[in-house]
Image (cartoon, rainbow, N blue to C red; front, side):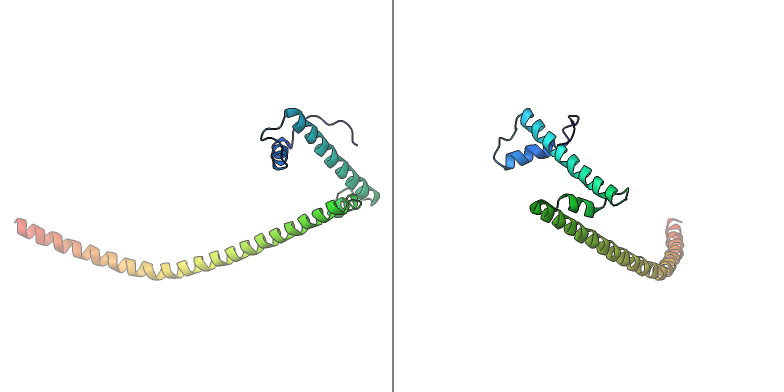
Length: 148
């Protein structure tokens, strides 16, 4: 195990929900949550340290996903779950990329269509405004005639 970690309760909310899902009370004791939080934190530190050692043995300063896979190689269940999460993350990233590209293309089409429509509408709007402007004085002049 790793060295002593400060008590930070990083995962307390998640652990409370997880404990409840596995049959504990809705509000588990503080000691239970702290104990599990320390265990989870220590485990994550150990995995990250192992991945960092793997990267340093490969003469790299950056840790890659393969280093984490190598650290998890002795536990096939965790390795399979990590690979599943990595592939799911790739799918989500690709879907977001395709969605944003499609969204940008449709936005460009929408803008060009509106620009074309606005150009034609502006001329018609100007003519109708002029007609309205020309018709107003005649109405006013007829009203003035009636008043006189």
